[in-house]
Image (cartoon, rainbow, N blue to C red; front, side):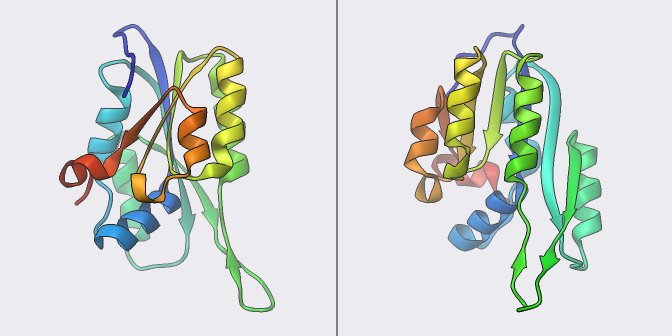
Length: 165
C-alpha cells in the first residue's frame, strides 16, 4: 500500500463510525484498532493518531473510548444529535478534514481510515500541497472516487482476520 520510509512522519485519522458500521454490516465484527494503527504507521514515525467517535449513550462506549486511548489514539468525541422529527445525525467529515489540513504541513503522509467518498476532494487538496495521502477501508464499501484520489489504498477485507475482532 505505501511507499514508506522509516523517517517519514505520518498522521492517522480514523473515521470510527464509517469503520464500525461497515465492519458490522459486512462481517458482524468489530475493528481491531491496534492492528489498524500498526498497518497505517507501517514502520514510520507516528506524529498523531486521532479517532473520531460518536457518543450515542450505548453501554460500552466509554470503555471503547478508553481502549482507543490505550492503543495510542487521541479521541475526538461528538454527541449524536436528535432532531424534532426523530432523525439522528452525527459525522466528523468537517472536523476530520480540518485536522488533516492542519496536520499536512507537519507530516509526510496522512492516512485516512475510512471508505467515505466525501474525503476525495480533501485527498486531492492534500496531495496538491505535497502530502502523501493513503486510505484504509473495506473494498466493498469504499468509494471509487476516494481510492482514485489517494496515493495508496489498503483493502481491510483482503486481510479481514487481521483487522477484525
